[in-house]
Length: 368
Image 1 (cartoon, one colour):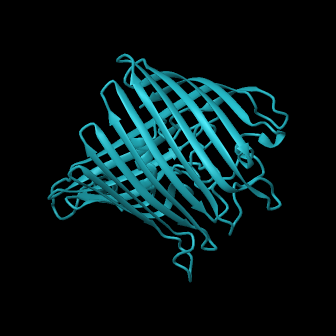
Image 2 (image 1 turned 135 degrees about the horizontal axis):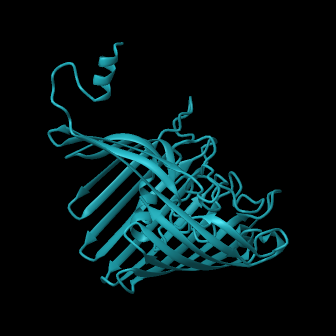
Image 3 (image 1 turned 180 degrees about the horizontal axis):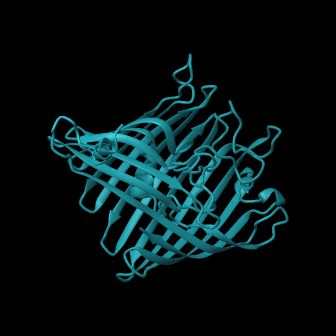
């Protein structure tokens, strides 16, 4: 191909003489790093100081864009990589765009996207109802916000707003020959907003390779008084896949911090819990946030040889953020975590018999 032809294609020209379609591409990201103290950080229960990635927002870099196709129709895409700012590693090994990798169309019918993306239930909580936006540290993000996979590959997703009602539905293909159900996922979310008040809920079901089910139900609400905003929610999870102990937004299924997996395949683990919190705009630059999470669980795996039991767990977390500018914030976080019975094995290094964990962090976040 001639050099001139290559330049024309690179510029987005068509050979039919059609006019340029207006398009935009944006490079964006977050770099969030903190210094953090943990009261219990090894098998002997010793304390530790660490440099960690983030506190509330995971570090990321991404590309997103739209093209105006005319008649109210737009093409759009998003590619987003998660990384650990403390060491430069990718958040998911061998996955370049571990957070988002999708393309879609937007018009009067809503948005249709296909590829790797967040589930509607995860977005419902992270963007609207969880006071800590689901958190980042393993100690304040244990809440199984969407159970199982919260960011799923091979997904077809639809979103639309109908006045005050927002709807999101997705289906992730399992891509298993001979079994459409294996490794598939369905997720949904519904939100109603009336001025300062919002209420929403959702349902999600994820199937593993053996077609064991992991289902999650959620109902949440918030009220914005202006200076103060209140949040609250309820969740119920039933998991027979053996993989839901604490979610990981970047990789989906994860195991607990110890050798236990949190559940046994084929044995239904049940989690029932609630959360509530508040954010207070103390000044134009200073925001204070507090949150409480509680979980009562049954059939928690607490060993590698098939032992299961019941347990309880709660977390109290606080977060103070001061904006140096619209793009740069400094913050401090503190959280206290307490567990009982089988749930102690889901605390970091709790095989030593520790039943509580306290962490404190200070950090800086820049958004570009």
